[in-house]
Image (cartoon, rainbow, N blue to C red; front, side, top):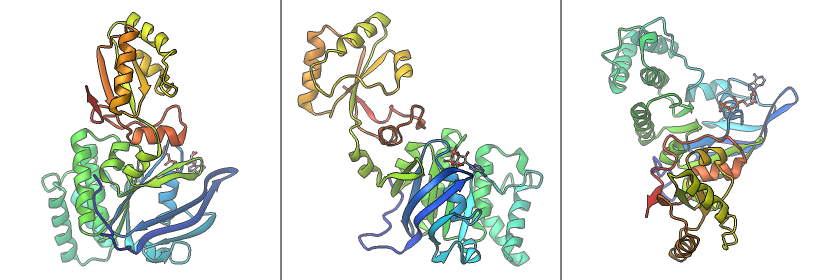
Length: 345
Ligand SMILES: Nc1ncnc2c1ncn2[C@@H]1O[C@H](COP(=O)(O)OP(=O)(O)OP(=O)(O)O)[C@@H](O)[C@H]1O
């Protein structure tokens, strides 16, 4: 579920906007004309396969590198003309973490407070408050190098918040975290947004985007392949299917052969997932999930003598969007790709 309803029906001012954003490394074009308009107080998720350019977008928007072309405004400041204005309004965490492992969590925070020119007293107050908020008070006096991955990410975000930024960039904030830490991180994002912060998130976890984002853009081949709410994106593509799972390899092979002759024009098993599906002895039959179509499929399976050990109906999810839009053979997968979306019949 998206974290916020930023506009409440009224148009919000854009916290981030980009028109015709371009960036190349040598003769490799990474961003080939990207347009973005992100309302204040919302969560925007940028999805894309490895190497699509997500981090490059974050680096440009956060003034770490310069674009080759296009106009970009962040918090009302032009990134090229007024980078200091942008930097004063934003916080960045993620793959280029600011945490220094050699000093304690508290010292990291105090260092940040110094960088933001807070008085000693104010720095200590903000540090104590944020360490408490991110459940790090107990570990505050320990070197950050001894922290778990989840604790480091929390410290990283806490450090970012010392400057009270109105816009936060989270570059793959939950990569490598266990499920509990991911959910904690999601909760942190929700709290930030309820305080009015704008969150720009990059992720390879589609369930994360589905869970948090008001709007999602899929970056592929240097361009935004599609943009919209999770629901809008899911409506763009036909991802529904019936999944048959077998425990007996010969039953699976027989069914795979028979399905080549299935009489419904669009219902041939799709190549998606190929080897993995084969390993799992499962077959997918594209389907809109309607009662009429499910009945036809069941009748046909009965007539063909196919008895699957498991018959599940799958409605389109962001995985399907990702597969359809990025055309990748090895796309990112959500942590629980199918379990929550399939309903057993
Ligand atoms: N400094 C650089 N010099 C040359 N090429 C670069 C540089 N930085 C990034 N690239 C290339 O630009 C492309 C986009 O990289 P980027 O890190 O933005 O992708 P990404 O979508 O964030 O990938 P991932 O999901 O793997 O983190 C990649 O092909 C990468 O190899």
